[in-house]
Image (cartoon, rainbow over all chains, first blue to last red; front, side):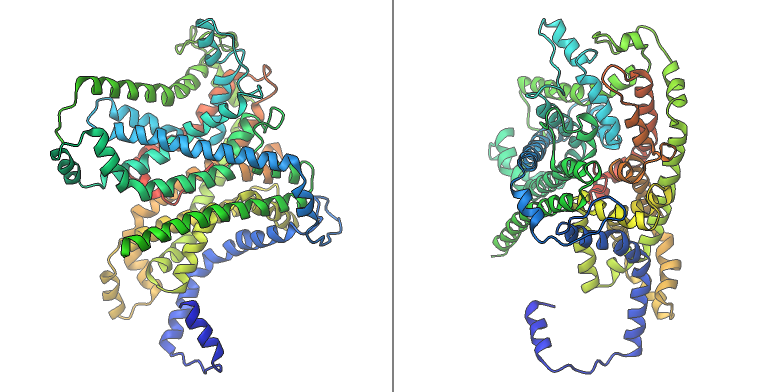
Length: 314
Length: 279
């Protein structure tokens, strides 16, 4: 039902619903099918979502018997001037953007290699999938060991080369790049599998035709593979950006946002505000700002999709 | 594609493949080797993947420490119950999403998408308050309820895909005989859906087994810790952490999901489109 139809229907006088016994039975069936799943979804997902938005307009704290009052836009006014929050927002954009783009580029390279006739493909494939199965906590633990300044292999290798060691996760300048590398490592499997699936759905005839026309591997990639993968690439990158922007566990275990807030991404900042500083209302206001940011990104993506569909049709 | 590749290109490709192998494989091998190393070796800057002395004591120490066995039991319980309940509750709705057209389907799809992009941090704050008022925070039951709800977008999405792949003609015949939706669901759809149900259930198990953030917020009592939370509590201040048992515990925590992913390797693409296995 389009908006137009709906407006028309509501402007008419209410008509008597004539619903046959068969239609009624079907509707009862539909409700019975949907209810078992819908009930928990409403209680533990939809209601918290709505109240999360509303909490942002209150001065609620974690204290059990505190009076909760609506404070209008107070939280948002305060938030606008909260330098630490905007700093974390910026770090979140850098983190999510870098991870999404670097993952895309590395996964594209890996997918191309796995799609060609090389040996060792099976082994690489298996290795590439393992990070996907690992609990994020375990991934963070492994990389903490690798980055450890006193016992980590990274500084060990630097020692061989006579280069002084670095406190990778503890140094202001290296902490963010270091966690980005971990994000990419953890993100490669998903993206590779998706790109690989996309590549395998390209008809081989397209490549053959291009090859007959004298196109080398580079040109075939640029003129055949890349355009065919465009929708997959855009979708994967947009989703990956949003997931990374919302992510929590990896950085929490790696650095807890440190040193000096250099890896403090917004969800982590919000978590600390809500559950350590116990300022639930203020933290929810932060959550609301994050939602708006994500909706903006999402609508940009959807507008792009829409334009493309339109372009394809005309 | 039999175009001849020049030698230098082949060499470059193998070099690239080798760097991927090292980048992706090294952390895994390092963890495995660390789990067998002695404390002294772990605290040195030596870069050797094969331990000088094999120390199997780390695994025993890991299991003795910090209630790791209790935590593994909690994780197992929570993951299995979540898996069963989420799949059972999702199946009828997934069927409805796949077969009944119209607004319900549109609403369901929109909700599945929304749940993928919404920041969990915004939902967890009121959710914590709801659970606290029901006295369900800091209980495994409360955690299961939340896990069931949070895995459902994924189970719904996967299952409706499996239902859509079943030809509707099979149902029409049963409908002619006067069977209702539930009879059709039980006698026609369910038997054909078994492989899909198993795959979905296994994915659900893995996402509950690996989950960290919700458990961190909802569980406070150490005896109720799930495995990821218990592992995280291993990490003390730098230098005080016992790296060997920590590595051993991390390996043990990875094994169940690794086995399941090994079994499901071929189904990964379809399953991940829903993207529920997110950090």
